[in-house]
Length: 279
Image (cartoon, rainbow, N blue to C red; front, side):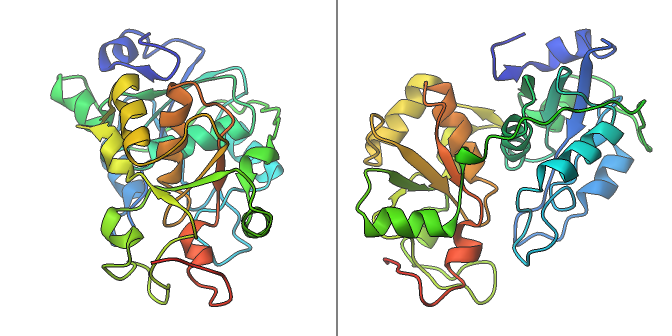
């Protein structure tokens, strides 16, 4: 096993049939995409991998996309997938590390003890010639005992309170620089352009290279270059709470394990004309 965050394709291939290992495909489309990742998973996945649908194992009572589900909804879903909190969960996506960190964050926030991401994702697995399969995958149901840590999930109200009281927390936005600086329209219709006042911009793609995270030293340098004080409290956001988790994982890798994530992100903040913004 590579470290506490990732496994290599070779490691996973060697442990593909371990009883304690559960593999999850957590692919999700970007807001401009209409890709049906569930169908792509049905067509082609790592042997034994189940599909974790971030848009359905979510809070469906809101218009916001893929918001964190209630603990009971998550518990029921992953229990039916044959996952307990004690399994070693291996997550991958079919893209460039776009959605796997969000699934990593979701499993962590509900108490999964052992979780890793497959470096290179499905593409990296196939590039080294390991097998894939197609069709549905089922496992014997298990009991997942949730242990929710809500203090790491930020709300709009908490951000407004922090802005009003000039709290020392830093807001770090994972969107592309041109969106952050209001140079291009948001991909989701009807959203304002700009960012939460005082935010720093660390585009999520700057942490990733060919489907894998850069080294901890490189990640530290990227955050510092963007003006982030790594000694102060931090909260991440993005377009819809997806790639904010890329930053959370990157910060976790360099020793900052108490970072918050604004789940509503710009999909919520940008839709409300009453909320302050900067351009």
